[in-house]
Image (cartoon, rainbow, N blue to C red; front, side, top):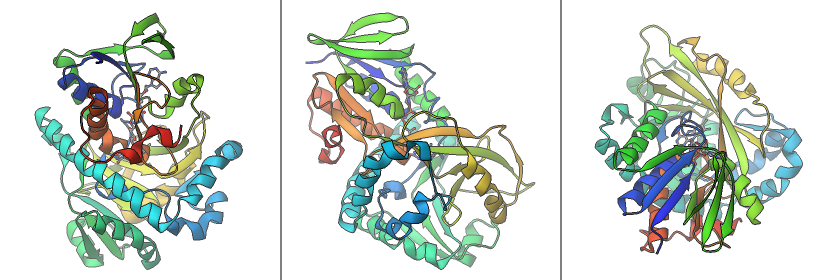
Length: 413
Ligand SMILES: Cc1cc2nc3c(=O)[nH]c(=O)nc-3n(C[C@H](O)[C@H](O)[C@H](O)COP(=O)(O)OP(=O)(O)OC[C@H]3O[C@@H](n4cnc5c(N)ncnc54)[C@H](O)[C@@H]3O)c2cc1C
């Protein structure tokens, strides 16, 4: 029976794994080359969302595939130099754009989401972070009837998953968000979604709960891992040490350590950008909005209005191309009175994604005492706690709360 665990990667997923494992009695070390929550987990839109259970492989994409490939629409920007290496991923993805698979994968995502948001709420209370939490729901907005109708299957999935939402007409939108400009014809309020006014603060507070309870947080870059008999050799900048077991939570970087062990890289990287705007004098947004036709999310946060973009699809590291930010700024101004841009350069984050959009959580298929929790795509902030719970159940040999085969890493490795 494993007693001590090294968790590699201190984003929300690694922090959550460390916290749950510690509470189950394991001796846990959390290791990252940066401070806790300072990569992708810091710059996201901060939404703990019941409605983002929707798989990306949506049959509604099929009629506009040609537009997507030609970079005509602002929700998707292909990085052409990576097109060939992305092709197998893309073909698999297109093959999944089917109603049955969409509803099936979305159902699995909804189980993870419901359980994870409950855990978040508990931990937020424990950490005394209630002031970070905005419970006003999340608002999807449609400028055109066509955009609204295109998302019919998504609403069907939400209904079948028991997600509560309310249809709003133009007047009702103005009632709950009076400072929005009157350009939206329809809205869908996801009543129970909650959001965070600063996701990085949340990560750091969870990491502090772990540290305060005796957990060790180390700052070091990991170069490689190698099996050595019953143990693992962990190579970092400061040398090599033997450890009993490992959980890899390195987000987009996880394949760098898995590749040398013989696993294929299953990821496409959906890069996403954000900038921060000041609201115009006296104007207020009460909850995050998703302007569907214009392809951005705007979330009210401690530092201002965080505007984040859709997908910039790549396969590896390359210089940031924040053109989607430049394109959405005029659309943001059409929707809401904003003032100055408060960030010099857009922030960039990496959403590691497999074609069915579900994370890879579980044992590495060909190695002992190696567990994986990565590929959380656009839902990692939401799914951190349940990822920790499932990993701790695997390591401790405990029963899972629901069927978790949908997240089995073996399906892509
Ligand atoms: C624009 C945008 C908006 C988003 N909005 C939302 C949202 O509203 N709601 C939501 O639920 N999700 C959202 N997401 C997704 C979410 O942010 C991610 O899924 C989540 O942060 C992933 O967490 P993680 O812990 O897996 O990865 P990360 O936060 O990326 O953590 C991985 C860690 O591994 C470390 N690391 C990597 N390689 C090494 C190495 N060799 N040695 C040591 N350390 C290493 C990194 O430093 C990093 O800290 C959004 C993402 C983006 C980009």
